[in-house]
Length: 104
Image (cartoon, rainbow, N blue to C red; front, side, top):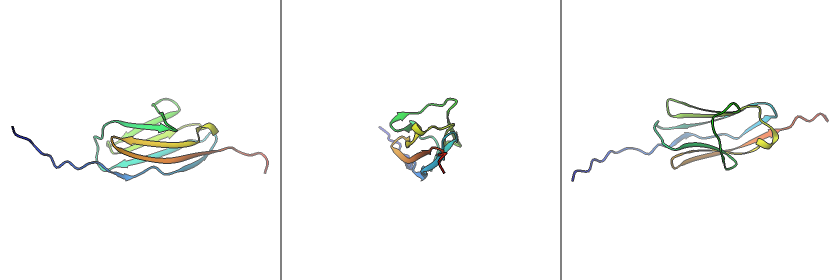
């Protein structure tokens, strides 16, 4: 029995998510960069709810390493914790959506 051992390094998070404050109706973008491509089971979450690519939620990947989530036309109820998970790697950040006050 021949076992082939690849000294395959585990991917790591090179730069994680950053907390973002935006106003109602704006878009919020979160980016996470991994050390190498090909990490399986990539998923974005907002307050524990899995996010899927649609008109409001844009999920993209560049070179298999740079993962980007853009939430368009955010509302106050979108405030919460955004989490990026790739295999065993996790990065989280806060999204704060601010209302526009007419009382200045």
